[in-house]
Length: 160
Image (cartoon, rainbow, N blue to C red; front, side, top):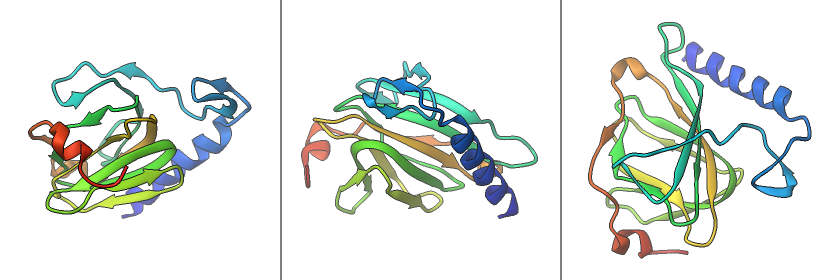
């Protein structure tokens, strides 16, 4: 737990230090804290998504931290994390859903905690992009387990 707290402290310190009036793609009046990174070319995503790794897992922290940006309509496949996952929503509007539970709307300022091995997906709404800091603690337990794509019916079901 101390390693996770240390990694989160490092992330938040970097965020505060980096927030120096940079203008960016999220609107001319917004401030970019982290770059959106490289486009994810992967069978594990529908639509256009980007990833900028901020902290790579190592033997000290056992935590991965990345900035993930989804364009409108983009989403991950169903997946799980053996060590759990924490999402800090930093901009936009999107969705988060755990298997056999209703889809939830997520917005800037929301914090999602996903227990280890919980099957879920997340992504942008159809009319807005969304960005979040994805924290993968306990990486010594294994990496993400990718499953099937989220169908259009699953994506469109529930709140918008």
